[in-house]
Length: 210
Image: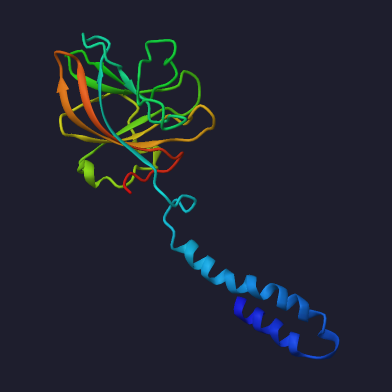
């Protein structure tokens, strides 16, 4: 349809008489018409997040400790940071970090270590945890389906992998962050967990490999 319209205008450009006014229009628009086809092709070739080209990831290893243990380590992590400079670990028990966390380490009734997602007191969308049988290295994207994520505490298992989705806010705008985690070590006596993490630093971009 585009090609036919373009060549029709080109024919009008060469015709004498009453259609002479079309000549300038065809000449002005010809370069834009020629650009439309490769642009459309590139858009259809994009992945689910066509607005994002480069994947910006943070890879880190953190150790957090439940407040009930003697370690004194930060007890939570935040994957919805306003910028990549802020630390991943946080202490929601303190006033400064009371609102800066997505997942907190806690001990269950039997001493097991659990990761608890943050749920807002009133409205909003809280964070969620999705246990998976996939190998940590093979998780290429977080799931965008909110219903798949668990909102209740998840008991951690050594070497297990999890997809993480943050609460829907980064302090400035309403959007979600995505990450994946692998449990490297658990110490129930110290109430600590060592986690390998990959975070996507872009808002609402679920890609977890570059």
